[in-house]
Image 1: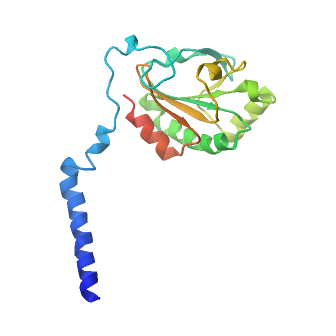
Image 2 (image 1 turned 30 degrees about the horizontal axis):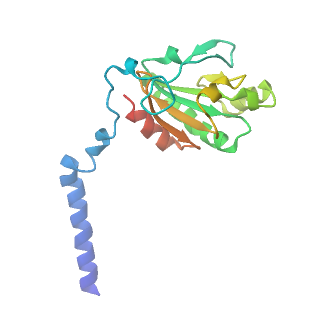
Image 3 (image 1 turned 120 degrees about the vertical axis):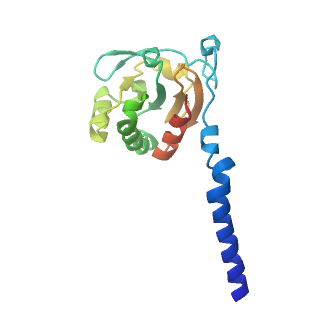
Length: 190
């Protein structure tokens, strides 16, 4: 039994040494940068649509403060476009993570656009109360007629599109994300 523990201990130490020193050069640690999306040359020539590696469809909506917002206004920044509703429990669970991430990285060219599906809400006051209760500081956009949700074919809430700085959709996630996964996906964007 004593031999068994010694062998196991040696294997664990060996694995640690391999991971710490050998893989650092060409293994797992260096693969972090390899996960980053490549910059697409001539991104403007890509088709407009909601498929991955399409130019994201532009839209114009009002924000919660009554200002006009266009998705194209955020070209040059990494964008998380999140479709949500105040009555949606997974949306409510995801929002604090989005707020933390936004506060920590807003100066790094990261934008979170929370597009409320206002046509599914009881009232605009419900949206305002939700935003106030959650203490959200990122832009809250209003899809009052459901046109943007239809254009992006939103079937479940929340749904997030990750859009790179050239306006290209790089990923779509349906369901709530935690802060770590939101961050990882945003950091992959060029």
